[in-house]
Image (cartoon, rainbow, N blue to C red; front, side, top):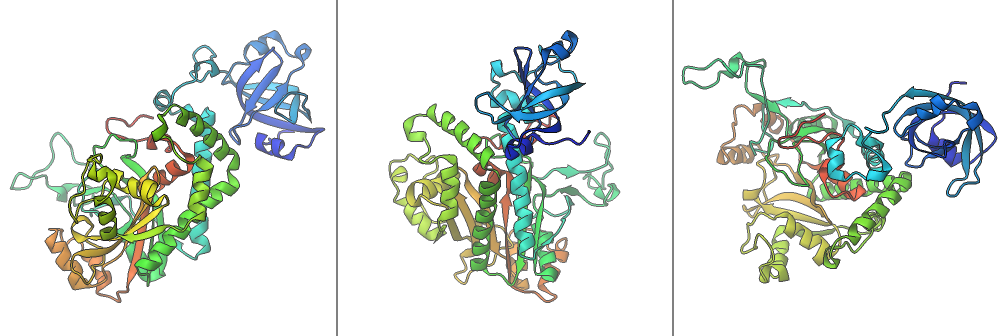
Length: 479
């Protein structure tokens, strides 16, 4: 009988008196008789009970923490605490030995998150990362489920691009030219005509611009893929490679955009609460322990699951940037100079501390800010009649700050060209994008959500490097 049964299934069923084959990794082995086996389907282990008389001393020596084994046996009721069933082993085979002395994941040494980042190839085998990455999977599935049910088309936009969607300029160059001896133009610049694509190309910062082209044919599309920023930010909230979800909808205005974004966030969080309760409860307990180490005033008012249910059950607070500036200007931390960046006048670019103040202290719920100054926003945003603001919207979350950024897009060709010229963007090179404003344009809107920030919020982890399998950050591209 070679059909393997997953540990999660055996524990869920709670049936007894049937034969199974389980395969997994040893978490612990005690009294030369009891193996705690984990196969990654759940954080819970299943106990394997050995008949010591039928197992050789040589085999027992090889049953070390981390070793991979296959066990055939019978599921029986358990007399042990904290488990209803266990497996009485009939046959045991070692699939992969593990040097117990050198294996870094020993219960006795409780490795820190920082240390686990250094051994990211093994950290999946810990309970914390087991829970985090099963949740990451569930959230990714929920993203596709939400858009599929709404009739969106999933569009794969290019990873290599010749345009800088955000105008931020912090991009990774893609080139096959010899770095030691690149071909040069008469002016002494690098001659990208000789390069693989015949022009300077980069890793994408966003699939939005191409997404807009899709929306002008399919109506509703979404992208979900890797994006890259060559920004030298060594913070707990930044990565150089991360995943973005970017829906783009024809015939949507700003209001429709906000409604979709709120429904989307609630839907994916709801999916995780319903389908990954066990992992969330584990992470909630972990977070509660962590909170105890903090000074009282820094502790969160809500537990992890409470916080997720709070987002689900509350309407997001909507207000304009102008209203937010008034609140911040008159706030206690601004008046007592507690903010690192004081708010003195309209037009200031909001920092994470301001966003978190609005969410955590003032409104005590998620906030959607709209109608930002044009000067601090991207070129493609729909211009308001006041000539000063654009139809932008950002969704701000507790503990995170901005989780979604979006806008109604400028569909007027002349206004868009004028804005690009003001920002010194290459109008010629972007002719393909501008064409959508010349051939049957329509009002449209969209937003971007950084997937890791969503996973960070849902798992309650403190560092974004702990919610992506192999983090890419300044001076670090391990594994």
